[in-house]
Image (cartoon, one colour):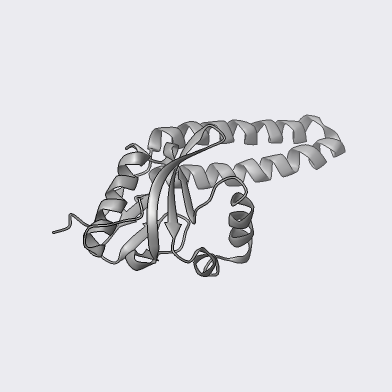
Length: 168
């Protein structure tokens, strides 16, 4: 008997902090535009637009009800990634990269999973492969629970579905 669905809520505190920082960077970009003349418009303008967009996305994410990861009877839905059916998942783990801990989900057929990504996200994922192997990466800062516990929950569900065994 499975306890699914499980929805992991985002770590909202870090999102509010990042939102305030992005808002500050937006204000700095706008300030550069105001006092910098034509050069200020060339440097501060793009900064204000970029960080303004980041501010909107971050604050939206902080108040949105969408989980960062959902485990359902059918599979796993990571935020900003395509859905993975249980039979497509090899295993999950907590892995370090550049002194940062991540939840990493490994698809059995990584290339087929990547083919479901949009062009730019697929290119980004291919670049990320040089840092860490896996199909889905979510930093520990996105979760309010330890990512090792999330990986154990995913692997336990995989073992239940497969009759008692996973790769890890």
